[in-house]
Amino acid sequence: MKKEQETAESDAVTDEVDAVVEGVAQVKEEATEVQPVDQGEQVERVTQTDQERLVLMLEDARSKADENWEQLVRTRAEMDNLRKRQARELENAHKFALERFVNSLLPVRDSMEMGLSAAADQGVDVVKLREGAELTLKLMVDVMEKFDVVQIDPQGEPFNPELHQAMSLVPRDDLPPNTVVTVVQKGYTLNGRLVRPAMVMVSQSVAK
Image (cartoon, rainbow, N blue to C red; front, side, top):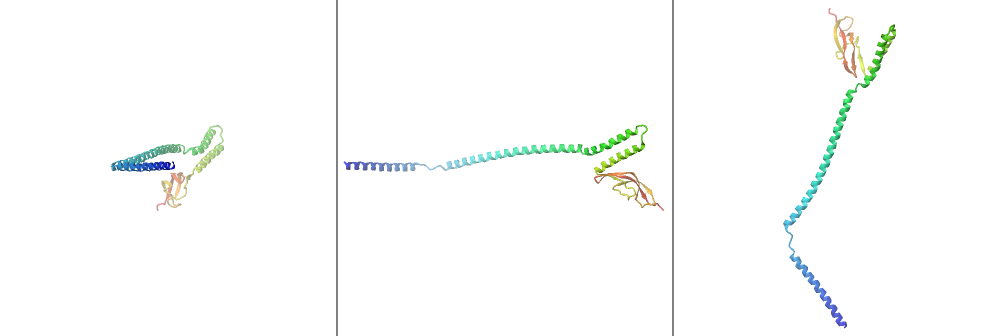
């Protein structure tokens, strides 16, 4: 009984070994039937991969181009707005450049109008009118000094063609030649720049 059992087990093992051998043989047979991949197919696969990569690169480039274009449009709009704002500010600066000067000059006009109104009254005090005129003149001088308007009054000074304009020559033997004898009209400078030359009469040597 025991011998028959051992024989049955030996036969089962043999059958399993045979099945494994048969399976290996079948795998070898199938392996020999496998055909090598065609080279054209490999090239096609590589080309397709390159195309996909190029498409991704193109999409990325387009995305960056769109982003740069939007940034450019925004920058141009900002520059245009800045240019318009600067133009408005410059226009306002031109319009209202004299605003401070005008505000400083208004009291001078008020004083002059008050003086004229007082002069129209009967029995006006001439002394008070003179004092009012002197006050108005002082206000005017203060405004001019505030804005660096300097008067040119070259009486007795050497003639300076850069600041003076000679109206006539006056023979004088008591003064050096080219000396300002008379100031017909005073001149003015603004911030060191000549606004109006002084109109003067200049001495010349007396012919002997």
